[in-house]
Every structure is written in structure tokens, then in C-alpha cells.
Image 1: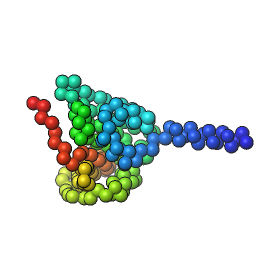
Image 2: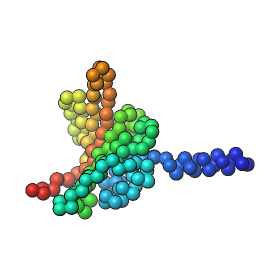
Image 3: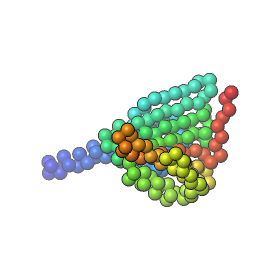
Image 4: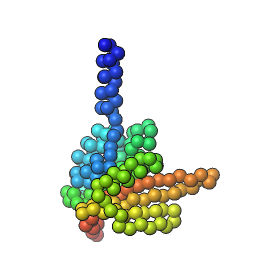
Length: 170
């Protein structure tokens, strides 16, 4: 009985600190304000790496990094961009370097009825644009070769509102 209780407690402890975050969770971040995004991602065991805010211009960005020791489960970084209180101007960029995670997120994107609207490749970067009624997502696959000839692949998703236009501040 003692071992059963210990195993049960260990299971709940593991669940409480898990970093499970799926594509839909990240997509929902786009509809939140900066303080709600901070609370959500800090609870998912991300840390704030940098934060910029312009009081005069009312825009800013927050970069979150995964505290996961195994970057093969979730994105390694999530950047949240906002312009004042207009939630339609929020943008998300998240990156990973694991193809399995990328494939899982790409499949989730397709399950949410996003359709490919364009594809192009230039300078070792493949860019696919996906859209639904309200959201545009740019998916980038970037191949980088180091000095030793070894190639690494980086994946990113950039999420905006379909009607997004950058605010002119100047």
C-alpha cells in the first residue's frame, strides 16, 4: 500500500510539472493580453529571457525560453509580440529544432483546417503559408551548415491575424 501511494504521488507530481503545450495552446495565446500570456507560459515552465515595452508607443515583445532539459518535446522558444490593447495585432513566433515535434505541430495545424496558400524556397529556407478564416501562419524550415560541414535544421511558426497590418508609429 505504501508503494502504491508513493507511485500515485509521483505520478501527480510529474503531471503538475509537465510542459505539455500543443499547437492549439500556442494558437490561443494570440488572443490574450501580455499578462495572461506571461501567466500561462510561466505555468508551463517557460522562463522570460527578455522583455521590451515602449510606454509611448504601447507595443512590446516578450521572449520565452523552454526550461525543458529535453528540447524534443515542445518548442524551444516562443516570442509574443503585441501592439497596445488591440488583440488582433498580437503575433506569435515559436521555434524548435526537433523534426518530430515539428511534424506533430504541423499535423495539428492541418487538423485545424488550415490550408496551404503558398510555398517558396530561397537560400536554404522553405516557407509555407497557411490560412484559415481568421489566422495566417508562416512555417519556415531553415537548413544551416556549421564549419565542420554538419547540417542542422531549424523550424519556426509565425502566427498573425489574417488582416494584420503593422501600426505606423512614425
